[in-house]
Image (cartoon, rainbow, N blue to C red):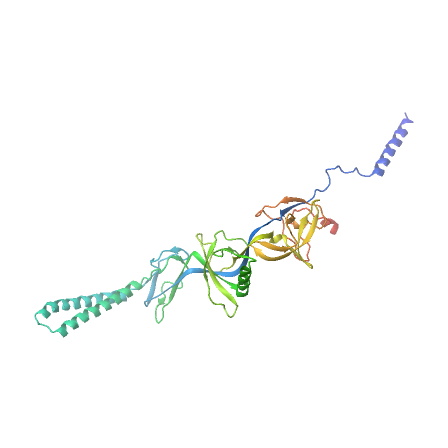
Length: 396
């Protein structure tokens, strides 16, 4: 038994040595890193509308400044600030005791003048009064009517009404304020917000270049009656607007033509004074190649896109773009159709890396923003590391 124990220990030591020489077990076939997924769009030719984003500012279609027409002390505000009101709604009550007395006095004078005129009329037929006396009595009636109408108007103006329907702003005077002395005091402003107006400008040189392209047959004139509104966050306003006005003269200071459009604003989402962009249709192309704006990158050699070849490898492709069609670039050269261009997941698309292309759905959530020109892309939180990138632990 003593001889057997040393022999068993030798066998175990030999087995451990062989295991150390072989090293760790090879990973199974399913333990390797899978190819990162990217969203791609297959390039195809089709009709496209050339658009141009033009800067503009929102304005109320109608704006009314309510001012005091009579002098007096404001007794009460009759509206809620920031609400929608109808035309004719009383807004303020100004102390009207003086105007009530004047209206009563004017009414009494009118009644007296009418009584005299009424007595003179039958007396004129029997020549009891002269024609001159009768005409003077008639003139006094008309003068009393004018005085009474003026006194009644002043009495009505002591409660100024809303001249238009719309949304009323904040009151510019408070109770106890003396208004209308020597000037028409500004009381409040009412603005009609549905529909709402946008004034924007287009360079006359761009307009002339477009007209020449249409005349030469290179482009077809687009229906510019309908325009779109791009909000500050880059999203499109759901309601489309209509072009209402184009100026007939060029602004000598800016060299641009002023245009005006109106948009429905039923929910009052758009407010006057906001800077927006108007997506203005300019021309129509029958056979155009479009590529999403976020798929186009810039480098020292110009613009390029990342494509996926038949083997699933990422291949950069230089391109040249000219104009825009909505949120897409119109490609002049570099793409012919059928290429798979990476739109989403550019932070994982290194040249030569193998990726798994998936069809891109417009409007789907984006993985991360594309890299700026000359700068490496930054992976989105939780995304797989790009090919050749080192983990943070190794960098430290």
